[in-house]
Image (tube, rainbow, N blue to C red):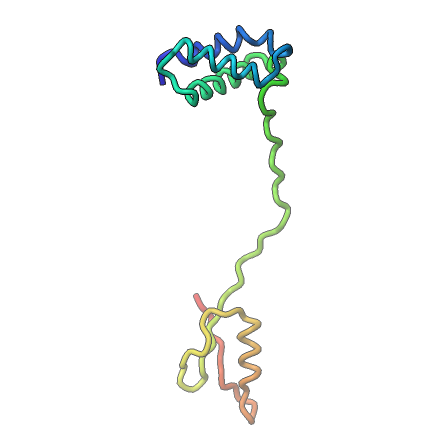
Length: 134
């Protein structure tokens, strides 16, 4: 960025500010950017636009009423979520009861309990067991 570009933008902003109601916001912005480019010929349009934005923010801090209708208004504060985020469901592993071969890894407890209930032996002995994952 060229030295003094922000100062030039602020001076051009203040110079053109009384005309903003006659020419409109878009033309006002174009005039300020053109003034900055005229004062600093080696400056790109993007740099001049950035300097304009700096001048706008500076003027908002100095005199908010003077620049009330220029540019975008500040975004409203975001609402905080009221949704409660619960703890992630704990995952379990289902294995065979006799030889501990894995049947299902990292499943939720409800599904694991259904598998164990469905795999109960004739005498009521469980063929599958649930292991807690750490």
